[in-house]
Amino acid sequence: MYEKDKILNSFPPDLAKDVRRVLDMLVMKNDDISSRYYIVNLGGLNIAIPERVYMREQTPSNMTAIQRNILDCIFTRHNNGFVRQRHLQNLISCTEYWTIPFCFKLLGEYVDNILYDVKKHLECNMDRYLRFIGENEKFFDRTKNQMISYWNCYYRSRYPNKESYIGFNIFNNLEMAYNKRLSLP
Image (cartoon, rainbow, N blue to C red; front, side):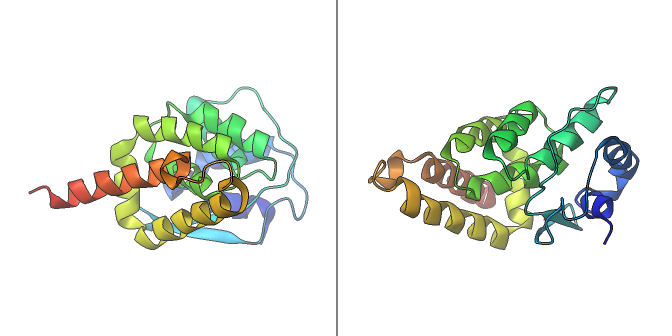
């Protein structure tokens, strides 16, 4: 599959024109996009998002706000954690539903500093996160299990009490809010 098509399929079809515009501004080589994907449901659409992108970080000019958000979503999948975090920080106040799978996936990664920024994005988008969880319960569980695995491997000695680790706080809050939402009439 052509590298740019791999990214195009990571967004809802109604964004295709803007995604193509962003992709036309990016310099990509073969194998810059991982062949591994995670698939999520986004409002009834199956979206396939690459696990990683390996292209050089780029900041094209003359983009609309939507196009900048698309670029930031793409770079939340970057192989460098600092790049992922920088682009996540650009999305913190963004309320577009299609950004949620990119940000949510970061909850299951090993860079704990990123989790604090995901929490900020979550606080601006709680209803959207809860909707996403409802559409992707298995993905929620898999991401939570990844967070637990990374805590166990990298952070357990620093945070022996699970409740003191940001990842557990986030998932506990999401589960409580989701269960509360389910119990509403």
